[in-house]
Image (cartoon, one colour):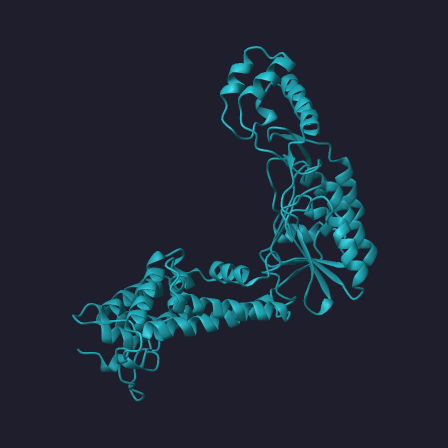
Length: 436
C-alpha cells in the first residue's frame, strides 16, 4: 500500500551511498553501506534517529533524481456481455482515470472484479469513490491485497471467492534504495470504517507492519463486515484470464491449473503435441470470453484434458503401462475411496497426479507415452486389451488396489494393468481375466 508514486529503482550500491553517508554525517557507517550489495535496506535495521534521517533524505532524493520506476499498468477492461469490469494488476498512476472513462461509456456495468497486489493509496481511494458512486458490487476471484482493499470495501455488495485472499498492512512510503518507510494509517482507517468495516478490524489491519501482510480467515472477514458473502466459482463469470486474455495467457493458465498437461507440451515444442494444448487453451479462452463461470470452465477443461490424456495413454507400450500402474497404485493408496475408484477404474492419471501432489512421475509418464505416439506417426497403435463386458471384478477401492498389486507383481504386467485401468475394458471388470 504505497503512498508515494510508484516503485523505486533498484540502484546499485557504490558512490551514491558514500555521498549519502557524507550528507547525513554517519561516519563509520559509510563503509558498511558502501559494501552492501544491491537490494532493499530496511530503515528498521538502523538506529531510530539515523533511520529517520536516512529515510527522509532518500525520499527527497527519489523526487530530485526521479528514480521511481512505474510498474506495468493494471489491465482494466469490460467483461463479457458488458455487465462487469475487470481490473487486474498493480494500481498505478492513472488507473482511476482509465476506469472512469470505461464506466462513463458503459452504463450497464454492475460489478467490478479486482485482482491486484495493491499500489497507490490515492488511486485505490479514487477507484473506491467511482465504485461507490456507481453502486457497483466488488468481487475478488483470487486475491486483492494492500491498497486494493481500499477499493474493494466500497462495493455495494462485497464478494470473495471461496479460498480467495484479502491482505492488509499499514501504508508506507518507498525510499530511494527500496526501504519501506511506514506511514500514518489514520486516513486509511477512516476510509475502512466509513465503508462499514468494524473499527477494531481496521485498527488491527493497519497495525500490521508495512513489510508484512495479514490475510484473515473468511469467517473473520464476514464478521468484520469487510466481505458480505463468500461465493463459489460457479457464481460469477470466470476471471482467470483477466490479466492476459490472449492465446498465450490461456495456455499458461491451463498449464497452471493442470500441470500434468505439460507432459503434452514439452520444451521441444513438437507441433503436434503443442497443438493439443493450444486447442484446449483456445476452448478455455472461448469460454472466458463467453462469460462461462470459472467452476464450469474448469470442469470442461478437466473433461477435455482427461480425454486427451486417455487418448495418449492408449498408445503407450507395455513397459510404460507398468510404470503407469505403479503410479496409479501409489495414488489409490493415498486417495479417498471415490477418488481411488476413479484413479484405478478409469486409469485417471490426472486425478492420480493431483492426489500425489507435485508428483513429477505422472508428468514424465505422460510425456513418455506422448513421445511413443509421436514416434509411431500413422502406424497402428498397440492393440488394447479385449473388452470383457461380462467379467466381474472388484468394485471397491480395496479390491481394486489388490488387483493392481497382484498384476504388478507378475512378469509382463503391462497388458493386465492396461486392462485394469479401463483402457479397452469397463472399469474394474478385468480382474476376473487376470492370470492366477
